[in-house]
Each structure stands twice: as C-alpha cells, then as structure tokens.
Length: 465
Image (tube, rainbow, N blue to C red; front, side, top):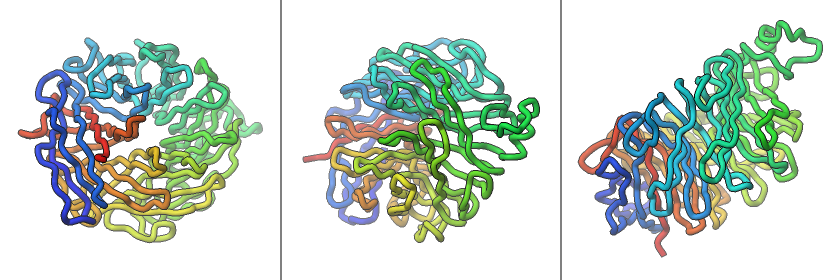
C-alpha cells in the first residue's frame, strides 16, 4: 500500500511497498524489515506490521480496546471462512483478540440469523468487555427484538464468552453506537430512537400512555438521542430521549468525573430540546446527571452540515469532539472545501474553547480520537482529497491518521490506501507507545491484497527514536 503525506514538508519521503494485507488466506506477518513512515516536523514512524482480517465476504472492525498487551477488536462479519470462526449466518457481531504482533489469539461471533452490527467495545473493571450495536435477530444469542433494529448490548468476560445480553427498542429502527462502564459498576449506552413507535417514561405525566406513539410523534420527530443506564447485569435502570421534530442521533457518550454524562451526535432540529440550531445539521452535545435529567445542551457548527462522531474527556477535564463540517460560518470560520475534519474543545459547561478544521477540497471526516501519553491526541478517519492539507490520494477514500496538540494544532498526519474504499474507524496508543489503527478496506491490487469483498485491517506504527 502507498503512504501519502501532508503538504507541510516537501522533503518528506514516500513509503514504498506498503501492503495493507496478507497474501495467504490466513493472517500472516508482514515483511520482517518494517517500512518507515515520515510525516510533519520530521516525525518518523516504524511500520511494525499491517494485517487484514476476514473471509470472502464483508468484514469490518469498528472499535478497538486494550487487554494488557493484547488488542480486542469489535466489528461485524458476513464471512464464514478465512479468519472467521463460524459456520452459518448473515452479519454478526465479531470480536477478535490479537497479540502485539498482530496474530489472532481467538475470534468469536455473536448474533442470530438476521442482521447484527457491532459498533463499540470497551474494557470493564472485571477484565471483561462491554459491547454495543444493533440487531434485527430474534434467535441465537439475541433473546428479544421488538421490530426492525434494536439496541443490542452484550457483556463478555476476559475470554470473550457471553455473560449477558439485552436489547432495547420498539417497532422502528433503533441503534446503539456507544456503551461505557459507569462508576457504580453499571453501564451507560447511547444511540438513537425511532420515536414514532416509542411508548415509555419520557412521555409527560398528563399524556395518555395508550396513545403514546402518536403523542411522542407530536412532541418529537424522526429520531432522538436515546440514552440508557443499566446495572451491572444489564438490567435497565432508566432511559431518556432528547431531540426535536427532525433528525437527532447520538454517536458517543462519555462519563463526567463528578457524575453524569455528555452524549454527542448531530441534530437537524430547531425546537423542543434544541435551543440554538445554526443551520442544517449541527454538532449537538447533551449533558445529563446521574438520573438522566437534562443539565444543559449545546449546538456547535454553521449553516452547513456538521456531524459529530466521537467525544473524549481530556486529562485536564475538558472534552474534545470530532466529526466533519461543511460550514464556513458561525463556529466554523474556515472551510477548505466540501467536508473537512472538524475538531472542537469544550469545557464541562459546554463553552466552546477552541476549534480547527483539517482537509482539502474533497471530503474528510474524523471517526475517533484518543489522548496519548504525552497529552496530544490521535485522530483517525478518512479522506478523498489530494490537495490542501492532503497531498495525495490513491483513489476513492483513503485512511487518515493525524495528531493534534492540546491547542488543537496539527502536529503530523498521513494517509494510507488503495484504489477503492478504505476507512479508519478507531485508533489508540498502547502502553508500549505503538499506534494502532483499525478499519476496513475494499482495495485490491498487486501490492494491496484482499481476502474478500471487504476486509478488516489493523495497522501498527511506532515512533522512531
């Protein structure tokens, strides 16, 4: 696979012979001599290894977390061959444990005979994992489904065995994108709700629960932020939805140090819970307390489409939100063309502390952000540009990886990709300071192998001394 560098340093050396995948049907190590990835400000990285994972059909990795020196990957798989350990099924949740060399330790699938899609995984205090996603199944590992997609939350032990599962939904399309452990040993989840079919405690006391769906529709619209608080056994303690009369979808949630949560996503609404929409879709952040009561809500963006994908709490108790923006006004003073990566920093009260855009004249988005041991932040996503901040593109979408400092200033960035669609969905830095990027790729060429229609990939880089 080819490596492309940002425009800031014309003397940067392009990495050649960069492969994204293995040449056999099993996951193998890349050549023993790692390549060198150069980037902004003469920062250079060793390409430790690159793996593609999957079978002959569609396989994706959406999220990664650490388990001591190993990595736990979460996504979904359609394959029944290659690296996938199952005999039948459509799309299932797919959990893969790999070691520091990228070798598969185990992989397991969860779901039923219908479509099941994993979105996030994080480590829990008992050494296991909490997983979020959505499911259409009514059998297999899925004990309950109310119609179309439901939020599906599963708890795994350290060996990847299913401890419990629970689903939440109604007749419409309801999807969960994030789940985190809470300070009391329970869990909080975030996603969206098709409020047309909702009947539940968010209705006002004087409203008739027998006609709940119609009343909810009169109060709210297409989709709502939908947040659940679960106990340690996955039993619902409370749930709340927030939004307006148009489309509102939560993509991530983070716990606050003094209690409560901030959920982020995007809103198209201008009414009900949304107080200040700036035009089309905005980043929307909603702070709630430990009971789910609304503390504050804030919109960020301009008159174009602005979509938030992820949030983290920083080491100094601020919050950084990443996504993409098509705006060039209000909170977004600079747009480089089409959609840019947009990064904002807010405090615990939602005040906007800073923002930056990164991109070229085509489309860029950020899907994940991770704070490093130096206090900087890794960003992963994808790009279509070959100008502006991105000097080259192999075709379609390329994988984007960059680092910003506490002031949101870009420190270095690079892209990887082939001639087809390549997406990065998550990133982290491990205790050995390796940078691990995950996602999926449809590219295939003499130098870019592919086991099927779409493969999951894992890239390991380490900064050169």
